[in-house]
Amino acid sequence: MNARRRTVLTAGAAGAAALVTGCGSSGDEGGGGDASGTPTASDTASPGTFPDASPGGEELAATSDIPVGGGTIFKERKVVVTQPEEGEFKAFSAVCTHAQCLVSTVSDGTINCPCHGSKFSITDAAVEAGPATRPLPAEQITVSGGAILLG
Image (cartoon, rainbow, N blue to C red):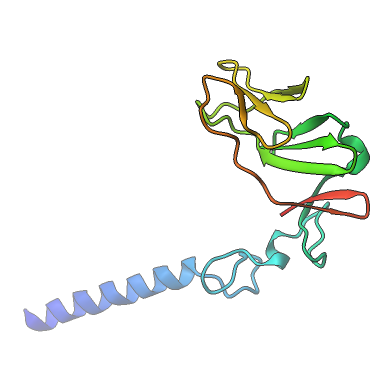
């Protein structure tokens, strides 16, 4: 019975090792990431990205696409980019801090949430009108050569 128990345990351990190996990535198979599982620049590169830009990332828009005194919402990235003053660009999360709805418009100097009416300043995302009580979190952007890059 002991020999049989060892066989079952050995087979179980071998199966677990195979499962772990199968789920891992050597980095050569397009699975992405380094040994820690963190995506690397080459893994996240896609059209509209600039992996060699320093710093930089995915291109969101041209600077000319963001109106002065207003902003643009990038729903797919859940980011809003504003231009409070000519040449001054800011980026914030487009997810409202009140109920996690996606903001829908930028007008009259505020970023506006359609769910409950919260409004946030285009300058620093401070709450201009509730029910939200916390500002929108800032997002990292880089302006380079007329392009706004996320990250």
